[in-house]
Image 1: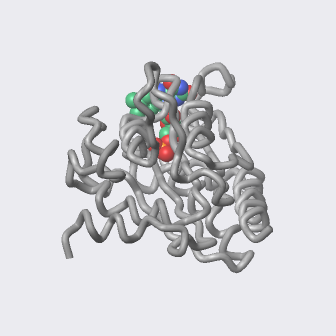
Image 2: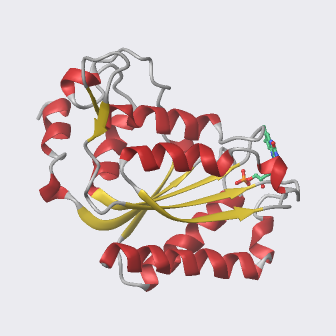
Image 3: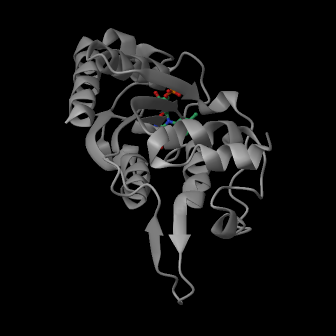
Amino acid sequence: MDAQVFLQSSFNEQTLKPMVLGVGGSPRKSGNSDVLLRHILKGVKSSRLETQSVQLRDYYYQPCIGCEKCRKDKICTGLKDGMTLLYPLIYQSRGLVLVCPTHNYNITAWMKAFIDRLYCFYDFENTRPRKWSTRMQGQNRKALLAAVAEQEDEYDMGFTLEAMHRPLKALGYEVIGHLPVLGIFDRGGVKKNEDVLAKAEQLGRELATALKS
Ligand SMILES: Cc1cc2nc3c(=O)[nH]c(=O)nc-3n(C[C@H](O)[C@H](O)[C@H](O)COP(=O)(O)O)c2cc1C
């Protein structure tokens, strides 16, 4: 089946599942974001909800090129790359967890490119500025966000959580929780912080509960 036809056929409300997709935005394998994502999803699974997780560093994909082909095609057809594999997973999962380290007060380039590529889920009118709506609205989508930074002052985490929150809210997700983790530099160092891991699992359970309601 043609990839575009396959993609479009997976984007209808019948294919939506009360499943949680976890997305890791760190380039560092076995780093702190990986640990946090694992624990959040452990909490989700303990509430008997299906999960799947992906690490953006394992996918080859480009940032949005602004070709606007998605306006007509309703999916990204200007680029065929790793995102083509991720779109059905994103669309079909009612729950989304994004975990990202702070890089220069912000999300990583991987996470930014991932979020920009969700542009194809918007519908735009022909007015200027273009009025917009999203095809993910009103579907009981819920999200959870976590960020980790080396410095201990919240200032140094910068815009990391907000840079994920605002676009997800615009897309139609209700963001039910934030987990900011400060003061962690060493690879996997967060494993020693049992309070943070417990909080991550608790948030995972809360996400599952919210999705079941
Ligand atoms: C390119 C780069 C930029 C960073 N910028 C910041 C920053 O602005 N503020 C901060 O507190 N930590 C910063 N850090 C540190 C990471 O956020 C920190 O080491 C984090 O624990 C990494 O998470 P990870 O193991 O999931 O990759 C930066 C690290 C890198 C590699």
